[in-house]
Image (cartoon, rainbow, N blue to C red):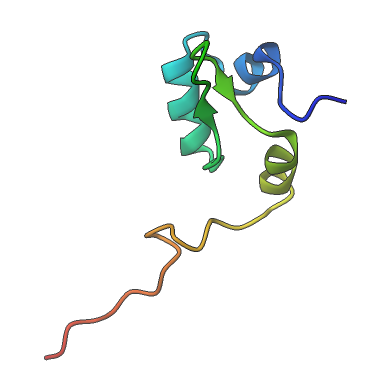
Length: 74
């Protein structure tokens, strides 16, 4: 079993063929570990991360939307 999703799987998930658009769509869907490969420029998405997010896994701790918001004093 491969530890990353195939290019065909990524295209099916995102609906896009170009890596930049695929990456943007994956990040919009919450796959924050998706990235472009340094050699070929194709999207890399690890299967365990994909399965975790699809199973309802949360956002990373350093995500601005996941952090508590401080209210300004009146």
